[in-house]
Image 1: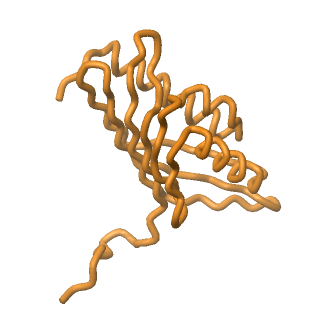
Image 2: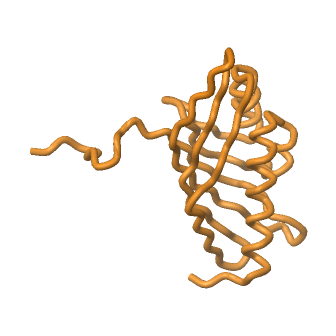
Length: 141
């Protein structure tokens, strides 16, 4: 699907603001980008988020556990139709405690809705796969 340059730039701007706020452990900064009706899945088992408030609480807990944090999005794909945009990206998450930083690969999808003035995040699924490249999701018969 082809999207306009303006839409792509606007969505990329929101994604930069998201990764910057996340990396700065800035819950309020992330939440400024989130629509009230947000829902999604986060990285841990059972992390089904059914509201923006739950997402904010989850981020606050996550941020409090790390001395340093970084989020980089790679191989970004953005598509849109009208006022709805969706994002697919590989991610690298770096979390540091006690002077040691652990970097893990992740996967991220997002859905954003254009409000006329900005784009707001309404859905996300973030995972940190445990599988090694080439591992099958299901065992061979």
